[in-house]
Structure formats: C-alpha cells, structure tokens
Image 1 (cartoon, helix red, strand yellow):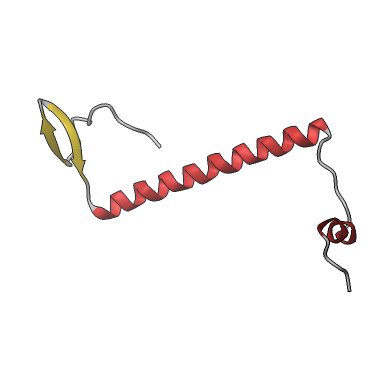
Image 2 (cartoon, rainbow, N blue to C red; image 1 turned 60 degrees about the horizontal axis):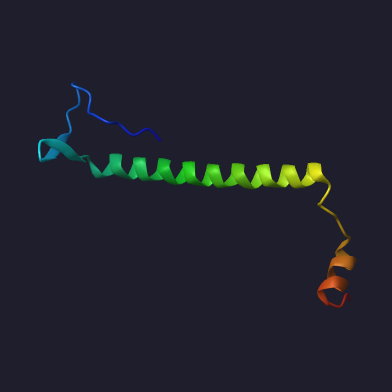
Length: 81
C-alpha cells in the first residue's frame, strides 16, 4: 500500500484542512472499500511470508520432525480404532 505525503495537483478528491495542512481526504465509499481490501490482503500476505520464512528456517535447521498418524495419536493419547 502506498501512502502519499501530498495530493497530486490533478486530484479531484475533496480535502479537509486543519491548521493549514491537509488532514483528511474525502473518497467515495467504493474506493475506500478497495483500499481497505488491499490493506487486508497485504497484511495477510505479510503474515504468510513471515510464517513461510520461519518454516523454511526451521526446516533448514533440521528441527522439524514428521511422525505417522498413528504415532501422533499415541502421543496425544487418542486411541486408534
């Protein structure tokens, strides 16, 4: 997501001034929703990237171990049929 420090001269959005500075921009609700969706998608992507990076580091360090379904059940105290 890109944040702007000032509005382009060609921008047609209404702005709210306070103390000589632009403090808010009025945008159509559909545009606002697109911006919110983009921010959420970016957050999810960053969380995924962080989790993947952590997994790859653990895999490369050899700290991930796999066990069979039956062994996992035994370790968790779940009886198999």
